Length: 134
Length: 134
Image (cartoon, rainbow over the protein chains, first blue to last red):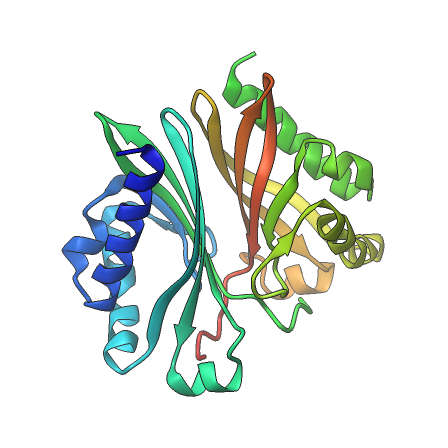
């Protein structure tokens, strides 16, 4: 299997684990030193596996109430030992997606190859800001 | 020079080019097919060099009015031919930073090595959302 295909499979499996609120599946291919820039604060990111695991709880509750998390586009740039991927998802409540159907969750992922397996070392999640005054 | 140092230099030069509103400097090490997930829409990203160049105009106006764009933390993961970096910056108007001094602009960058030089193929910029209802 090519590195690109391995990363595509890793990512689609991760999306399925989120959709089914399977936390062990979500973290299965993640570095213990993961740094995630999440949609909400902390401002300097979620750091380390314990904090990363905790961060999914409110999102799983939201998914459990009917929010969508659907892959729209996945681009992978895989090198010999480091890779990144950037992703667009339809993510929101049915009401929110009805109001703003073009809105997208954007995710960028950074990976390293460790002992022949791809491992996620960094994630960056965000929605576009329609009010950029700050 | 190590790949990590080359990417650190590329990135600090890019920050300086933004601070001095030097558009040619900002795009000097960028792929013509750059895909940027910017702070504001478009929802599916800024695609290609012409759109990328255009996207800087309103930001340069904001910088010209006194907004800050200061590097706080830069982490680089460099492989043989692909790399990524994640970055925290103090970015905002003096008033905005006074109100919320911990707020950070988060940037993730994906790079490829082309003919011995590192080139930025992807950028993802965002602020944490303090209101995540959607």
